[in-house]
Image (tube, rainbow over all chains, first blue to last red; front, side, top):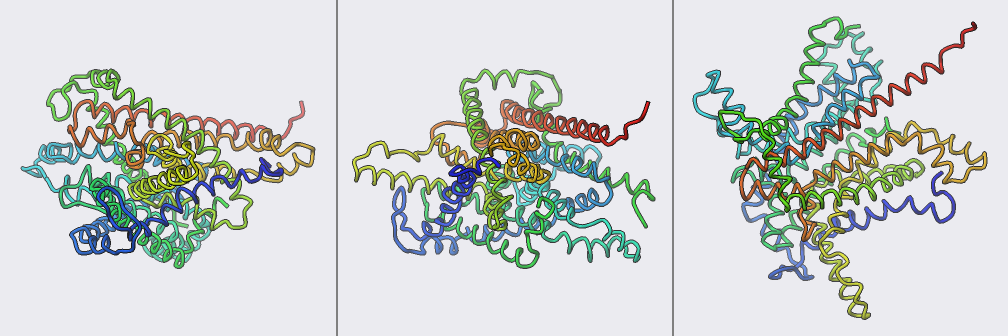
Amino acid sequence: MLGEDGLQKWVFYIPVVFLCLFFVVPVALTSVWSVFERTTFWMEPGFTFFAYQNFFTSARAENYLFSMIHSAWAVLISFVLGFPIAVFVRRRVPRVAQHRVILLFILPFMISELVRVFAMRPVLGRYGIINNFLMQIGIINEPITVILFSPLGVIIGDVLSFLPFMVFAGFLSMEAVQNYIFEVCDDLGAGPVRTFRDVIVPLAAPGIFAGSVFIFVNGIGSALVPIILGGPGAVNAGLIVNQAIVALDFPLAMAISTIMIATLATLLLIGHRLFDLTKILEPIN
Amino acid sequence: MRDDFSSEWGYRAKWAYLLTIVGALLAPVFYVIYISFNELGFGARVYKFTFDWYRVVLGDTMLVGSLKWTVYLALAVVATTVPMGLFSAKLYKRTRHKVLMVTLMLAPLFVPADIMGSALLVYFKHLNRTFETIGEAIGADWMTAWFELGFLTALIGQIIYTLPYAFVVILITMSRYRPQQTEAARACGATAWQAFCQVEFPQIRAGVFSAAAFVVILSFNEAPRTALLKGGFDTFSNVLVSQMLNVGMSGESYAMAGIMSIVAMTAVGAILIYTMIRTERLDRRARAAAEPVMST
C-alpha cells in the first residue's frame, strides 16, 4: 500500500494534523478569544463576558433568533421539496441509473452559490420574471415586493442554495434501506402516507437530520444570502460576525462564532444520540 | 405489489416534478447568462445580442488580474487538497477510529463560511504575533510575517473548505477497490509504491480526477472565506461581490456571473460525460468478458 513502508506511513496523517492545526484549534479557540478584552484595533488577554452581554442585550440576539426561525423554514421547505425526490430515485429509478439522476443535482450545486443567489435578484425583483409573468396573466396589478429584500427573500435564497444537500443526504441514507422493506409494506397493504411516515422517515432519519442541520446552520451562518437578498430586517449570525469584524470588535465576532458553534455541536450531538449519524456512511463502508 | 409502473402517469408526474426542481435551481443561472448577452442589460424591452459585456470584462486589466489570482489559487488548492484527500481516504480505510476520523474530515462542511473565515483570520493574526515575538526574542527575522494575510492564508482557508469534498469523492471510488489486490501485488514482490501506482491508482483514477475537478470548481467559486483571508489580492468572485454591493448590477456583473457559470457547467458537464462514457466502456468490457466462448 502507498507509503506503508517505514516513515512514509506518517504521510497519511498529514491531513489529520492539518485539520487539527487549522480547523480544530482555531474553532476551539474562538471561545477563548470571545472573553478577551477589546482594544481599539485588536484585543488583549483578559476574562470578560462583555461581548456576550453586548450580544444578548442588543438587537443582535433578536436577529439571531429570527435567523434561526427563517432557517427552520428553509429546512422545512427543503425537506418537503427535496426528500421525496431522494425517495423516488431510490425506490423507482432503476439501480444503474440512480447515481446518474442524483448527479443532476450536482450541476446547480457546483455553480457558485454567489451566482445562484445573485441570479435570484432579476427573478424576484420588482420587474423580475415572476412579477412580470404574474402581471401579464393578470393575477396581480402591482409587483409583489415582499419576495426580495425581505426575510422571505432570504428563505427562498437559502432553499435554492442548500436544497441539493437534502437530496444528497436523503438519498445516501435511503441507499441503506433495502428494497424488500418497501415490498413488505406494499404486501401488508400500507398506504403511501403510512409507509412514508412510519417506515421511510424513521429509516432515513440520519440523512434527513444531517441534511437539515447543514441547511439550518448555513442558513444562520452564511452571510451571502442576507447580503444579496435580505433587506434591513434580514440579518443572520454570519452577517453580524462580518459587521463586528469590519467594526474591529473581534471579541464580539468570536462570541457570536462561539454561540454558533455551540448551537451546531449541540444539534449534532442530539442527532447522533437519537439517530446514530454514522449510519449515513454505511453505503461507503 | 403496487408500483409506479402500474400508473404510467403517476410515474411521469414524478419525473416531471424532479426535472422541474432541477430546472428551478438552474433557471435563474441561465437567465443571468441570457441577460449577460443583451446589449441593453437587464429590464430592457428590446433584446440585442452582443458579446460586448464579455469583451469589457476580459479587457479590464483589474478583472483579468483577479482572474489570474483565482486560477493560481485554484491550482495551488488542487495540488495540495487532492493528495490530502487521497491520504485521508486511505487512512480512513485502515483506521480503527472511523467515527472520529470521519467526524474530523466532514466537520468543516458544517461550519458556515463566515464563521470559519473569521476564526481563521483571528487565528492567523495571533500566530503572526506569536511568531514575531519568538523571532524577536531569539533574533530570527525570518520568523516574521509567516501568516500575514495573503496567498498562503487564503490557500489554507480553501483547503479546509475543499478537503471534505475531495475526501468523500475519493472514498466513494475507493469503496469499490479490494485491498486484497494490493496484498497480492506485495506478495508478488512489488514495493508499496509500485503496488499503489500500478494496481490501485488505475482503479481509483476516475475518483481522483473527479475530486480534482470538483476542488477546482469549489475554489473558483469560493468567496466569503477568501474575502477575509486573502490580504492584498482579489479573486474574481470577490470582485463580483464588491461590484454588486458598491456599484449595483451592471452588464459587467452579469457577464462576470456568466463566466463563472459557464466555467462551472463546462467542467461538471465534462466530468459527467467522461464518467458516463467510462462506465459504459467498463460495462461493455465486463459483458464481453462474461460472454461464453462460442465454438466455431
